Length: 286
Figure 1 (cartoon, one colour):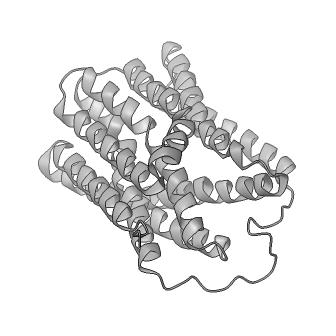
Figure 2 (cartoon, one colour):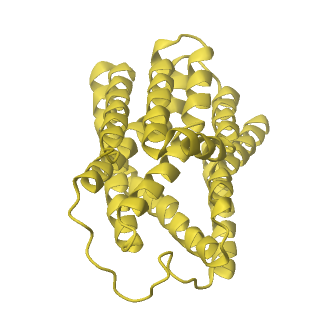
């Protein structure tokens, strides 16, 4: 039952993250404000920081774990209502309504879909088990919330920063660089002892995973400009599959080994592969 819950949570979070981006991007494209895309993804970091602060407050009031889930669910419900009131309808990002053409049979596009799935697999392992890693290292509940607050605060400006860097070095190089930095963070979560390991992991995970999500979507749309909804759907499926398989595989490894070292190494390898595959998908100069 727990594994089914993990699978459902992974699939749902993938749909929310990626399809919310689709809705927002359509509105921004209609308004001619593509420059605000980074602000949308920064909201993910703010949400992580706010939820962490909420949990820290609940812990200080000696509330149990159920209270944390109930308050988080209540905040999510409020957010759902706000989205329903504000979303409305928008012209598709390609400016064309109706059926879209099939995705092009392009090797670079196939590579990006695979890379995006590997990213979903790799990042979600640490995102899922970072609290357990902190707990296994003797950290208290307040420190658990602190680590996630650090991740959220690092995530808020990350998309803006990486988009600026992508303008200088290119989208594919920026994607690969963020994956490499996230590899360092994932590895630090189990390799660096004491409080420093989880804090480094929180900063580097928060400072990259939101940006990689945004860069991957942007790269997919560039490779399939006439079918933005189709590429969103396919990349969401790849991302969601990674988010489902990652925690299950990591959980089995952790159960067999008694710690999260092998699971984190597996996640780091997936992220490294994602960066290399995405970098190799870059159009070659004539």
